[in-house]
Length: 163
Image 1 (cartoon, one colour):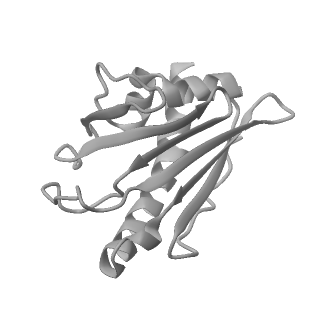
Image 2: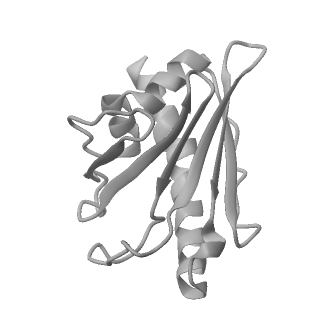
């Protein structure tokens, strides 16, 4: 059973969400760390990417309406089967915006096995307080919506269809 969305911008620094998935932690881990699988459900062309600590993973988004944007993360930490963390620039409505001088937020995925063999996947995106006020508000709202779609629609749909 997939749990309903729980995230909302409760603070000005972080987004927290979780989803309970029927698949095993090993299967969910693979969907997070295999570039082809991550790209398939996250909606980005990650052809040729390597997901490992210190690596930069980039590719064009493939989600309709977002093709002008780039998925661009730096892998901070990987604890196999348990935890993945990356840094990125939170969403913007301008695909030409120069975000190079802006601090990146930290996205942490934590996997926990459940008694029925499934997975509780928690996601925390933090570091929004380092952004300017106007940018922070838009990024919090946009990424809150984004995580709801990714965690409660795209990832479960991908896992159900990919096996």
